[in-house]
Image 1 (cartoon, helix red, strand yellow):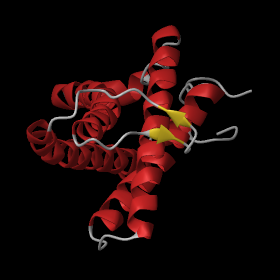
Image 2: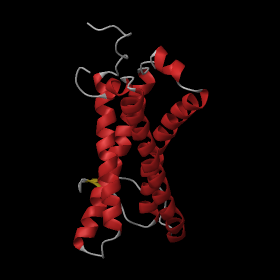
Image 3: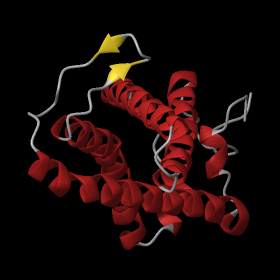
Image 4: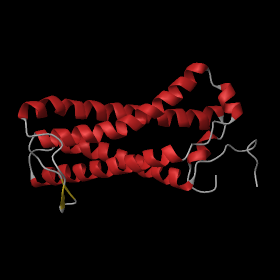
Length: 187
Protein backbone atom coordinates (compact mmCIF):
# COMPACT_ATOMS: atom_id res chain seq x y z
CA UNK A 1 0.00 0.00 0.00
CA UNK A 2 1.39 3.42 -0.95
CA UNK A 3 1.51 6.24 1.53
CA UNK A 4 0.09 9.72 1.09
CA UNK A 5 3.69 11.00 0.76
CA UNK A 6 4.08 9.00 -2.44
CA UNK A 7 0.67 9.56 -3.98
CA UNK A 8 -2.03 12.17 -3.36
CA UNK A 9 -5.21 10.95 -1.69
CA UNK A 10 -7.74 9.97 -4.34
CA UNK A 11 -11.36 10.93 -4.80
CA UNK A 12 -13.84 8.15 -4.13
CA UNK A 13 -15.34 5.99 -6.87
CA UNK A 14 -18.68 7.84 -6.83
CA UNK A 15 -17.04 11.27 -7.09
CA UNK A 16 -14.84 10.06 -9.96
CA UNK A 17 -17.81 8.52 -11.79
CA UNK A 18 -19.92 11.68 -11.40
CA UNK A 19 -16.99 13.85 -12.55
CA UNK A 20 -16.39 11.89 -15.76
CA UNK A 21 -20.10 11.40 -16.52
CA UNK A 22 -20.57 15.15 -16.20
CA UNK A 23 -17.51 15.82 -18.36
CA UNK A 24 -18.76 13.53 -21.14
CA UNK A 25 -22.28 14.96 -20.94
CA UNK A 26 -21.03 18.54 -21.13
CA UNK A 27 -18.76 17.85 -24.11
CA UNK A 28 -21.65 16.16 -25.91
CA UNK A 29 -24.09 18.92 -25.03
CA UNK A 30 -21.77 21.66 -26.22
CA UNK A 31 -20.92 19.86 -29.48
CA UNK A 32 -24.57 19.15 -30.28
CA UNK A 33 -25.55 22.68 -29.26
CA UNK A 34 -23.03 24.18 -31.69
CA UNK A 35 -24.02 21.79 -34.48
CA UNK A 36 -27.80 22.09 -34.17
CA UNK A 37 -27.93 25.88 -34.11
CA UNK A 38 -26.37 26.02 -37.58
CA UNK A 39 -28.79 23.56 -39.16
CA UNK A 40 -31.66 24.73 -41.36
CA UNK A 41 -35.13 24.04 -40.00
CA UNK A 42 -35.69 20.31 -40.44
CA UNK A 43 -36.84 17.18 -38.68
CA UNK A 44 -33.20 16.45 -37.78
CA UNK A 45 -32.84 19.88 -36.15
CA UNK A 46 -36.03 19.35 -34.11
CA UNK A 47 -34.79 15.92 -32.99
CA UNK A 48 -31.44 17.39 -31.95
CA UNK A 49 -33.13 20.18 -30.01
CA UNK A 50 -35.22 17.59 -28.15
CA UNK A 51 -32.12 15.48 -27.48
CA UNK A 52 -30.31 18.61 -26.27
CA UNK A 53 -33.18 19.36 -23.86
CA UNK A 54 -33.19 15.76 -22.57
CA UNK A 55 -29.45 15.91 -22.08
CA UNK A 56 -29.84 19.26 -20.31
CA UNK A 57 -32.32 17.71 -17.86
CA UNK A 58 -29.87 14.84 -17.36
CA UNK A 59 -27.02 17.31 -16.71
CA UNK A 60 -29.22 19.08 -14.17
CA UNK A 61 -29.93 15.76 -12.43
CA UNK A 62 -26.23 14.83 -12.48
CA UNK A 63 -25.32 18.27 -11.12
CA UNK A 64 -27.81 17.79 -8.30
CA UNK A 65 -26.44 14.35 -7.48
CA UNK A 66 -22.91 15.65 -7.67
CA UNK A 67 -23.62 18.60 -5.39
CA UNK A 68 -25.45 16.42 -2.86
CA UNK A 69 -22.58 13.93 -2.91
CA UNK A 70 -20.05 16.74 -2.53
CA UNK A 71 -21.92 18.25 0.43
CA UNK A 72 -21.78 14.92 2.23
CA UNK A 73 -18.26 13.89 1.19
CA UNK A 74 -15.36 16.29 1.52
CA UNK A 75 -12.87 16.05 -1.32
CA UNK A 76 -9.34 15.03 -0.42
CA UNK A 77 -7.17 17.97 0.55
CA UNK A 78 -4.48 19.09 -1.82
CA UNK A 79 -1.26 17.31 -0.91
CA UNK A 80 0.85 19.57 1.33
CA UNK A 81 3.70 19.74 -1.21
CA UNK A 82 1.30 20.78 -3.99
CA UNK A 83 -0.49 23.35 -1.81
CA UNK A 84 2.85 24.79 -0.66
CA UNK A 85 4.06 25.15 -4.26
CA UNK A 86 0.95 27.08 -5.36
CA UNK A 87 0.98 30.87 -5.03
CA UNK A 88 -1.99 32.39 -3.17
CA UNK A 89 -3.67 33.52 -6.39
CA UNK A 90 -3.69 29.91 -7.65
CA UNK A 91 -5.44 28.75 -4.46
CA UNK A 92 -8.05 31.47 -4.97
CA UNK A 93 -8.53 30.53 -8.65
CA UNK A 94 -8.63 26.82 -7.75
CA UNK A 95 -11.46 27.28 -5.26
CA UNK A 96 -13.26 29.99 -7.23
CA UNK A 97 -13.22 27.94 -10.43
CA UNK A 98 -14.75 24.94 -8.68
CA UNK A 99 -17.51 27.08 -7.14
CA UNK A 100 -18.22 28.71 -10.51
CA UNK A 101 -18.24 25.33 -12.29
CA UNK A 102 -20.86 24.04 -9.86
CA UNK A 103 -22.91 27.22 -10.27
CA UNK A 104 -22.79 26.95 -14.08
CA UNK A 105 -23.77 23.25 -13.92
CA UNK A 106 -27.13 24.57 -12.70
CA UNK A 107 -27.35 27.96 -14.41
CA UNK A 108 -26.85 26.75 -17.99
CA UNK A 109 -29.62 24.11 -18.03
CA UNK A 110 -31.99 26.23 -15.94
CA UNK A 111 -31.61 29.19 -18.29
CA UNK A 112 -32.15 26.81 -21.23
CA UNK A 113 -35.27 25.41 -19.57
CA UNK A 114 -36.56 28.92 -18.87
CA UNK A 115 -35.89 29.93 -22.49
CA UNK A 116 -37.67 26.85 -23.82
CA UNK A 117 -40.65 27.49 -21.54
CA UNK A 118 -40.84 31.19 -22.41
CA UNK A 119 -40.66 30.34 -26.11
CA UNK A 120 -43.58 27.92 -25.70
CA UNK A 121 -41.54 24.80 -26.46
CA UNK A 122 -42.29 22.23 -23.75
CA UNK A 123 -39.72 19.75 -22.53
CA UNK A 124 -40.94 16.17 -22.66
CA UNK A 125 -38.09 14.18 -21.15
CA UNK A 126 -37.25 11.18 -23.35
CA UNK A 127 -40.48 11.87 -25.22
CA UNK A 128 -42.60 10.46 -22.37
CA UNK A 129 -42.33 12.66 -19.26
CA UNK A 130 -43.65 16.21 -19.70
CA UNK A 131 -41.82 18.61 -17.42
CA UNK A 132 -43.52 21.69 -16.02
CA UNK A 133 -42.90 25.01 -17.66
CA UNK A 134 -40.22 26.89 -15.79
CA UNK A 135 -41.70 30.29 -16.68
CA UNK A 136 -44.89 31.34 -18.50
CA UNK A 137 -44.90 31.68 -22.28
CA UNK A 138 -43.54 35.14 -23.03
CA UNK A 139 -41.85 35.82 -26.39
CA UNK A 140 -40.06 38.92 -25.07
CA UNK A 141 -38.65 36.95 -22.14
CA UNK A 142 -37.62 34.16 -24.52
CA UNK A 143 -35.68 36.65 -26.65
CA UNK A 144 -34.01 38.04 -23.53
CA UNK A 145 -33.07 34.57 -22.24
CA UNK A 146 -31.85 33.07 -25.51
CA UNK A 147 -28.46 34.84 -25.56
CA UNK A 148 -27.96 34.10 -21.85
CA UNK A 149 -28.19 30.38 -22.45
CA UNK A 150 -25.48 30.72 -25.08
CA UNK A 151 -23.33 33.08 -22.96
CA UNK A 152 -23.48 30.84 -19.89
CA UNK A 153 -22.79 27.74 -22.02
CA UNK A 154 -19.69 29.39 -23.49
CA UNK A 155 -18.63 30.48 -19.99
CA UNK A 156 -19.00 26.88 -18.78
CA UNK A 157 -17.01 25.59 -21.77
CA UNK A 158 -14.26 28.17 -21.16
CA UNK A 159 -14.09 27.37 -17.46
CA UNK A 160 -14.02 23.62 -18.18
CA UNK A 161 -11.19 24.31 -20.63
CA UNK A 162 -9.32 26.18 -17.91
CA UNK A 163 -9.91 23.22 -15.58
CA UNK A 164 -8.47 20.82 -18.19
CA UNK A 165 -5.50 23.15 -18.78
CA UNK A 166 -4.77 23.28 -15.05
CA UNK A 167 -4.94 19.48 -14.81
CA UNK A 168 -2.60 19.19 -17.81
CA UNK A 169 -0.18 21.66 -16.20
CA UNK A 170 -0.12 19.61 -13.02
CA UNK A 171 0.45 16.42 -15.01
CA UNK A 172 2.90 17.60 -17.67
CA UNK A 173 4.73 20.56 -16.13
CA UNK A 174 4.59 20.11 -12.35
CA UNK A 175 4.53 16.29 -12.56
CA UNK A 176 2.97 16.22 -9.10
CA UNK A 177 0.54 13.35 -9.68
CA UNK A 178 -2.48 15.48 -8.85
CA UNK A 179 -4.41 14.25 -11.90
CA UNK A 180 -4.29 10.63 -10.67
CA UNK A 181 -6.66 11.61 -7.85
CA UNK A 182 -9.53 11.87 -10.35
CA UNK A 183 -8.62 9.16 -12.85
CA UNK A 184 -10.65 5.94 -12.89
CA UNK A 185 -8.82 2.86 -11.70
CA UNK A 186 -6.41 2.42 -8.88
CA UNK A 187 -4.19 5.39 -9.75
